[in-house]
Image (cartoon, rainbow, N blue to C red; front, side):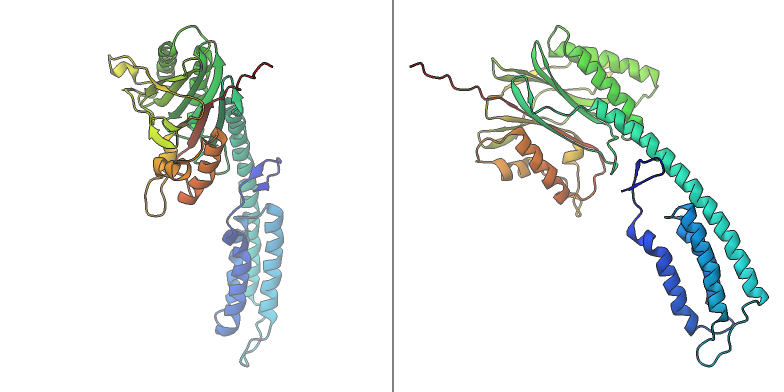
Length: 377
């Protein structure tokens, strides 16, 4: 990364592009001695300012233009190899090359200046969206009510937080409630929908009623969002979670999302249940969502993720084997903490897939162990 003129971070160009001007000059030096007199390779230096403009600023391009003109003159006035006579420094062909290089250099300088302005504008827009995403996706606290928690977010667009995945967890009178979701699409277009979904969850989660009423409220909000955009294909897959610490039970409503994974007693398995349509598509079916429950006791870890995790491919095209990898790491071992699971996935996923083609969001929660009662003397 490097800084733009506005002080914001700009992705650095590939190394080969940064070294391309130097490699181009080296190629000219290698070709010049072995070409006939009627093929003055120094004319190739006319393109040097434009090549430089891809990675350098206007000042650097202007300096490279002056260097190219001077270097053309040096090559024109240098005696050639194998007894050939030296070029005429002020022959009209060479003077034309100097003028052409100066014109190309002026255009390259203007191109570099325009590129820098566009770069700064895009970085600023991206930074605003990233600041919004950081505000929306609040850091997951280590402890939330009666549960321990940890989260991970990896956007598909490298170097930015902008994406279409979301998660949140909060303490409500009904217990600890959490959501993980995936907006159709990614990047800047998904930020508005992410804001609406998280806003509706944070409002509905604290209102009186059970988890089904939270889901119903969010569906109504999503229906209004679809009408406002409008986008007939807009939808959000999501899983809603509610933990009851007294009953040691978790209630789940799955709106077309990936099934939660439970790590319990050294075993790893998915918590299956009746699925519902994603938010935004609820009007397509008459059936209402169905909530299902599972036991979640101290020592268990509940893992929620988006499809960017399980659909990450390796070099052979194989998907990330989430359950197998979790069994290999945590199977038959003492109960992990949520942070242990997140740290493992954070290091194991890049080993499987060097590049992500979809956003990845992961949320892990575990009931907090209650301190053992102290014996009275």
